[in-house]
Structures are given as structure tokens and as C-alpha cells.
Length: 116
Length: 113
Image (cartoon, rainbow over all chains, first blue to last red; front, side, top):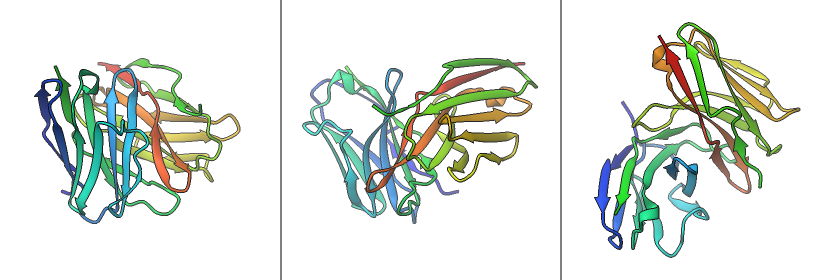
């Protein structure tokens, strides 16, 4: 049963600490997305990779967030330093995008981050 | 700016009723739309999709209608069940050199037995 795997499921940390969230996309998928979900803003796109290349990270605060795909089986989202306003659920999703269509995205269960 | 929005934040129905969840989009260049269902504590899950060259698509108990003239999308759920209780999102595929999915705010569907 292929699925997107995210770790950690829950993370509580103190302001100023570094947080790293990891995602294993579905094998064979060529696109990876990071979304952040809050009650106020809903699902916001943070970063988007196609064939491991970053295509869009305009939704991320560049001074503290970074997203990478060191290999096809791992995507990471790092926050350094973390702030209370970063508290949210972070979702990773993968899919088989073609040139003009992002296509169906398969989401992980999310990483719930609480920054105190 | 252009965005995907929902008319009703919460929809309460009785079990067995038909449910209709609406979504308005403003980007006329969007060519592909998806409805997702999100249960509490889980990630969004694909329900059904539709391309802009269609105006209706049916799945199992679900139907998506697309009205490009008024930029409106709806999800119809037949014989709604308690297990359908969740937040439903519409998402549009936008092309700006590459394609991404932009999500609406979501509608919560509450189904009473």
C-alpha cells in the first residue's frame, strides 16, 4: 500500500529551536509539495519540487525556512529558528505531474508542530 | 488577488440526504480541479477530479459539476452517510510556467444520524 510517510507526527519545541520535518514520497512520483495548514489560512503552499528540482518556494519565509530533496526518497523542511507563529500542521504530498497539470496529489498524515 | 473560495464554511445534513458543497474560483486559466476530503487528524484525500473541457463527472456517490461561465464548482454527495463527515476542499490547478494546486479554505460537512 503505497503512501507518503511523514515524520515526526507531532513535535513540540521551544521558540528559537531548529525543527526538521521529513517526508518519504511515494516511489516513482516526480513531484513533491510542502503545504502548511492553519485554521486561519487553510492550506498554503510552501514549496514545490519536480524531479527533485525546486520550482517554487515563494510561499516560504526565506530567512528561516528551507526545503530540500537530497534524494528521490527524501524531502525535508527545516525551520531555523522556529517561532510560535510557525505552529501548524505541515503536509507533504507527492504526485505524478505532467507538464501542465499538477495532477492528483497524495498527502501524508502531516506533522503537527507546536512552538512554545 | 485571485483565489479559490467556498460559499459555506459549515454544512449540516441528515443521514440519507444529498449534500452539495460549493466552490467559487476566480482564475479563468485554471484547467483542472480536484475535490479533497480531510478527516480529523489526517491528510487530505482525493475524491474526484474534473478537467476544464468537461462540465460533469461522476464517481461512486459523488458528482462534480463545473460551470466555467460563472467559475463555479460543486461537489454533490448522494445519500450522505456519517462517514462523510469531514472538511471538503476544492483545489485548482494553476499554470504559471509550471503547475501547482491551490486550495480553497474548506467546508465542514456534518452528517447527523
